[in-house]
Length: 244
Image 1 (tube, one colour):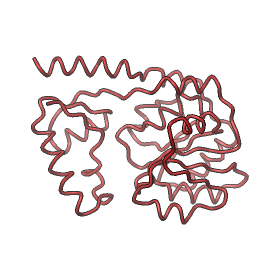
Image 2: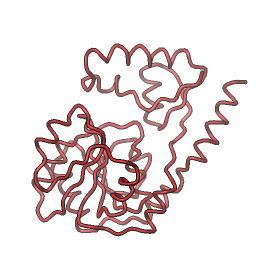
Image 3: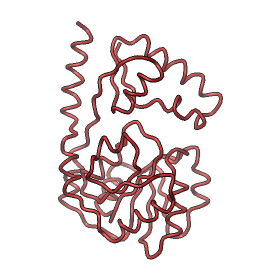
């Protein structure tokens, strides 16, 4: 058995889990880490957490990004909104994003899309008239939102990988995101970073996106390094070695 670990949030941030869920996360992920012949981590940050909490090593194999996002980049038609794609769980830090958005002046409206999470009610109650919350939407509608977004903001405090950031990079959308290790691992120096604990820095990032001062060329070139073909090839190679 080879197991893919996306993150160890149950160890890093147990406060985000319901008390009756946490024992199952702790047991089953511990058992998977101990009983698997091989482990794959989707980022160096997750690999480091596996070593820290379970004392086991893992092969880092990054996710890829859909080719459709590069097609979006060739058909970009920016409109008057900023985009955030994120489940509304507490660690996604959407409350801080809304506070920063409320403090900033002269911004386009903000579109927030993604599955409703544990912080959904608070997020929805806090959103004003300039914020549109769509909830989950079909994939084709999501593509259209990326095609028309003036900028992309991602204020998460914890990630195992950070797929929406990579998708925005590939789509040629200017990106501002949290300065946390998994996102640095994906984007390098090609996007604008901010401290997710600072509402002021998030506000400044929103204003930069609105002003169109964040370049996209280097980010798109970096995103091209993350392909599902590469992910599949490296995974097959690891499975072959683990079975021998």
